[in-house]
Length: 575
Ligand code: GLC
Image (tube, rainbow, N blue to C red; front, side):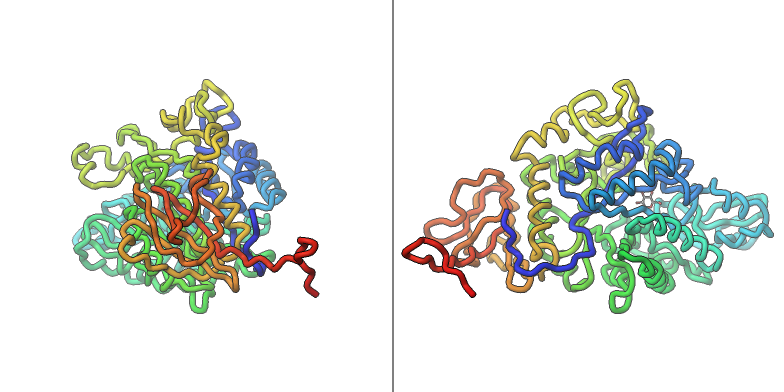
């Protein structure tokens, strides 16, 4: 592949981040649960794919009521995932391969089983009492929660403890109680925990539910909202706004403090926020003059319909809200969302278009494990759900769940990685192991081994795109411009990426029909096509660009050839 960038740039941000859900990646011990030594076994696979940074969902000590997002010791490894020595080896092996490690830091809450919470709940005068948010109930009798706040998963956001006759606040699930960041010891301790991992050499953090860190000091009631269903455009849902419990000014300020903390370290470390809100609210986390987080997840991409005009609008909105040097993120799935392939009705052509778009936009692409082979979502009954959110809604009748249009259990997107067509899809070293979630039956066709052997597979498409992105500075950091294509804009998304004098063009055909479009350059030089073997001409005799059904291409203007020395056929030397 040719390097079409003329100037090299110092990139401290990753080319692509791969998201590993440790429980489901690779089980080396044979107990049916993924572990750190299993991840180490697969690092060469990730290096071969071209991955240069990995975000790990939590593998810290936890009672696993929310699969590790309920932490009971922030500085220890859960025994089912390995030991601290395993962790140290993972970090060393990753760094030896030039990969960055991004840990998932759950600052917002602790497990209800954390010794801090046990102490805090034990009596009103326990030294840890103020580490969590305790309040009397509403009068008369204090039998009602202190205010009208709702948890993210529905229902009141308060849990009553009769021993001290007070309520405690939680934002997500009652087994995960929110820490009180207005208590200086909490803030100090959590920042020390960050230092603990930074001193070990980790390269950054993904900050879980950061937008829920601070709440209104007076705990005022949240106003009503007309929104019922949750969406990625705003936090309002279930007829409540979140004016007083999410995205508080103190949280924006804390993002800047966190940045200051990690900036003490060399080489530079990264901060990525899991925050929800309007684009304007998200923007605040980047801080004044980009002094806050390096990036936040833009979840609208996980729910935008697969239509070029919808993406065009969204990308332009993102570019406007987060101009360079701020970095957008391109996320099509994660451990909480329905898998991309299922949203695309298992259409490989569409998945290749999505991948091409994701890997040619300005910002940082995040690939959820298995996305590179088009792993589908599993159907798992709510009653059998391992996910506490699924179990919470197990009482809902099936027809009502269908009308919601989204999945209530997150198990479906967390099934074991499909490495091959063997028993357990190659997930476990023990063929007789019962994986913690059933392997998707599609693993016989959809698996890494099969796709690596097929040059035209989705896996090979991702691999070629990642390699192209790595080589081409215009794709990594170049400016973005939408190219108006006129009437075909219902079928085609086109844009240009420019970095200094290097320009590349991306044309994506979202339709099942061949398209012919005006070509923006006279002599296009094809750098990539979603069709591995593209033998046909890129342009028709009339000069128009030809796009095959569901084809995505990347091209550049063909460099002008220097004149040849007619006597020798050699290119003359230029002094
Ligand atoms: C985040 C995580 C999710 C977890 C929740 C509570 O949204 O992505 O998996 O359940 O926080 O920590």
